[in-house]
Amino acid sequence: MLHASKASGNRSYFSKDPNRILDMHSSLSYDVISTKGSLMFDGNRVPGNPDGMAAFSVDSKHTVIVRNHELGRTSGKLMGPFKDSKKNALSLGKNHYDPTAFGGTTNILINDKTNEVVKEYLSLSGTMTNCAGGPSPWNTWLTCEENTSKNKKEGISHGYVFEVDPKKDFLQEPVPLKNMGRFSHEAVAFDRYGYAYLTEDRSDGLLYKFIPKQRNSLLEGDLYALKIKLQDSRNWKKNNILVGEEFSVEWVKLEDPDPDDDTLRKTGYEKGATIFARGEGITSDNNSVYFTCTSGGKNRRGQIWRLTPISKFKAKLELWFEMSDKDMINMPDNLTVAPWGDLIVCEDNPDIDRLWGIKPDGSVYLIAENSYTGAELAGVCFNQKNDTMYLNIQQNGQTIAIKGDWNRVRS
Image 1 (cartoon, helix red, strand yellow):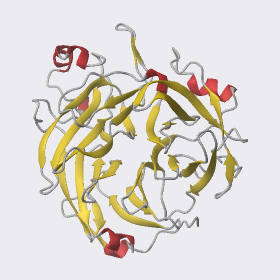
Image 2 (image 1 turned 45 degrees about the vertical axis):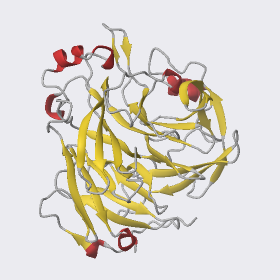
Image 3 (image 1 turned 120 degrees about the horizontal axis):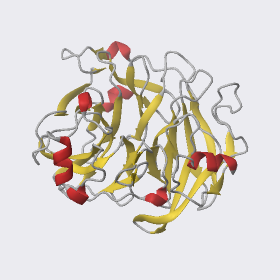
């Protein structure tokens, strides 16, 4: 693997968007398929702050997108799904997890041939700060809470992973997967052995591994934290770890995955687990798991790590990419593997948020950028049948579908 840092010179092929939503490569075009506040099929409104998502083929003609909404205890400007938050939440009974919380997921059913939305509806309700997540090997969506607060009155805790079945076209009962840990979750991805890897969006977060006890079930299992010979991977003070450097991995077991307080990472650190700088997006191909650390590196512009399982119990970890040049990726967040094998990376930074591709040789190319609102790009994923890309413009409350000649974009 080469570790190039310069972007390919494709900015001359960029087109300014007359609608002032998203500038992108001239070989691409987009359609807005969902906007916050619009009325959904179930009578609720499209919630705001869309974040992580994935697309699932549910039959020969349709795809379902399951989409997170990073909402907390109030709707406010971010806009929850209900007209009367308290009344509507209580009316859902056990299908709303916490009466005072308004995060969750929505599903978008799409006709693959026409790319039109057939229907849109609430699929998980009453969770908090649903940031990212990931698809399971059995084609369900795992939505992750980036919030460890408590509703003390109701005795309800947050900081969990919940599972959503894209083939169920109705609101599903929220069941917290407590053995996957209670912490500031960001995202999850699986290796070829069916083990789950989970990121933690904290400046002193850990990288977790969950080994299920049963196939296709995440209710029971054991939780571990990654350990290498260095306890601090952030490279903030000096370059302790070089790009391309590899480490043998150990896993320290976390006996209590569901602590009363937000202490899981501290317990792991006491056992020698390695600290990461805001672990966020995570994805996998057939061989490795890639995850971003949004504020890692000397300039705090981000890192991408590659974790490669060697066997069921052994793995190696490599600092695959570290952002250092002002012309390249700045603070990577959500990411996915494109159908053609490249990593596709969303940025989340205070400047201009962009969408990038990284080729297997380490060279990068620019796909799109938000030059207009400062809203974060999130949830990048692909239709499994036709290579249509789906993307959220978070604070805008928009979900868009992008089509075009991806070969030209990469050239």
